[in-house]
Image (cartoon, rainbow, N blue to C red; front, side, top):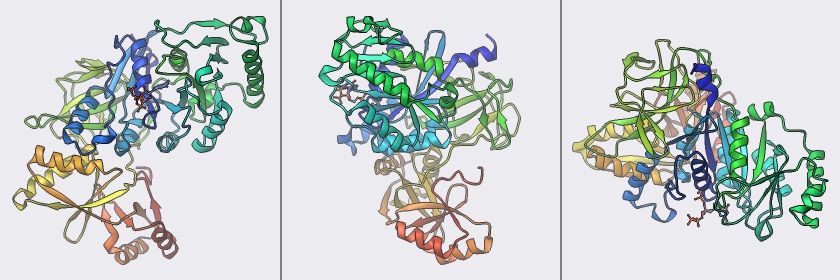
Length: 529
Ligand code: G4P
């Protein structure tokens, strides 16, 4: 198969949702369709149970599961589907944000009862930043949820994106009868406890025909006809280009647990979702069909076994063909690296692979060469854009509890921050280490891993900062003045960029008034880096 054929076969995406909306259930149904698993329940939810936030072994176990389920690949209708898993727990949101840089599109699951929730909004903001195409699946239609039109309005308002329903529900909750697919003009009738995997669909091109009332009551048929007319009146016909540019989200309704509406979602997704296209490097855009290999690391996972210090770096292939045992150029260090045991992930299995194509994710065993964001090429000096750090929300100072193990602590914390477990900021004088995270769970992970993997002991002192801002200013003098005035709240990030820790929103407002030329960024991806 040619490179172009391999590329057009691939669909690389992530399923995202607020916890409990049904991401795991939907993933599992997709895998069932793909034949990647045979029974429901085979995919372990990679969410850390809310009740066991201080159970370290549980965290470790979960980390193990999340390696195994990091990527789930399967074939369906001659397409190669790569689902990139994202942690459900909100404390691992940074991990999810980074994974979103490695996908070509996203399916967002929304609970029909709860509507748009906090985490949904945050995830969508990240998708909007890079115009990632999004399909929305409104799940749990078997429950008494919000009105479908109200849900669409809520989606548009809270997610700041235009929507276009491609299927439409007939009632909901105990009275849920099914959906009418407005795109394919098919009626899909709801059955609970259905035994077969596939949906049974009835082709009804004209909703006004008698055919509809052979399957649903007069009352339901009347309502569906009215709703469909209203939809056609309000919404423009579905425009695939707008969807692929990330400006329009098609919406489907269904019930993942009942495997209802999942097949139509999967098949439409395969039809409309983009295959790998071009990716922006700082130097130039890189087309997927370029012959030379390029790829970037978006996730690093430490080995669970403390006797084996190697890590797995997850690389997304952006162009060309990856081959086992071939030398590639690590653009940050200038080193030539080759990989004897690259792995791909098929559902729950890791498999040794000898080649991979754009859109694929491979696991590379690494003894410390990789950092998140690193690029591999065949010799060209390139750096892919788009692994930003987001402003953390919780800050603590790291304190060394065993002075004899200072070196181990330094090494451990630097490696953990390279893996993206947390952000490390250094404050001078005194080389104080300030750890910033999005959730409390990370501090437990850091403490546990420093002790078990590096033999270092630490404790944390909470700091009363509200947010970190990367600061830039065209006027170097003003920046200097600001940094002197706010010395107690200035530190450097891992690249040496200056960061300002604000104690409150008010604190930032005043700083902006006093130093009008300084720009305060909540994402590290400013000035094009
Ligand atoms: P998540 O990964 O997004 O966190 O959600 P997950 O799939 O684990 O689903 C959360 C809960 O919602 C699960 O119930 C799941 O069974 C249920 N669920 C998923 N899809 C549907 C649906 O279409 N209708 C209804 N009514 N429920 C659905 P749980 O009780 O938390 O877990 P479990 O014991 O069923 O595994």
